[in-house]
Image (cartoon, rainbow, N blue to C red):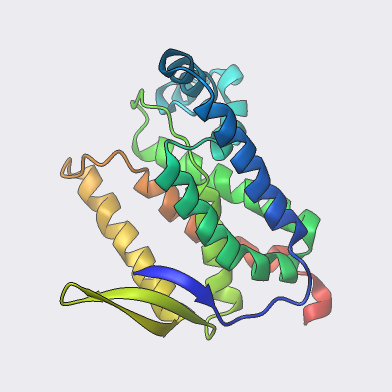
Length: 218
């Protein structure tokens, strides 16, 4: 299923959400201007390598933050930013811009740490905003479970647009991440996707969101 838009309207312009999109775009533009050799070094310098973090190298902790703004290709960044645009505005509307930024970064941190926990020996750099965005999705599920998500759904090899409750759409997404994460632990997944980062971010978002929502909404 691929989301097209949601029916939950925000009351304020999502300034921080668009700032995050812009920062990711600037970082990716910087990446595409590099030669392959320079890009390889750049990713290994600023991406998060689980094996380095597991060794408690203090110099690598900053990479948890920097890795959230790097991406591995056009599909990677466009799909991540599209999802952030759809779901992030409503979460920012509930939290306010500053709290939303803190929540986003903490979600990405929780996501990265869970992935490192499950794959501590990996020497492959982790990059991408998907862990932080998963936290936004977890928050959205708690805040707007009855919002409807217009999605492209394949039915007998034909894509059909349907509106699904957020509870169904995000619930299905989370179960698919759990299944993929379990397959990765069994060694049956070679996609290179950090499934446990998605799971960690999502669970953190669901649990922590109530601590961040502005009280005036209650």
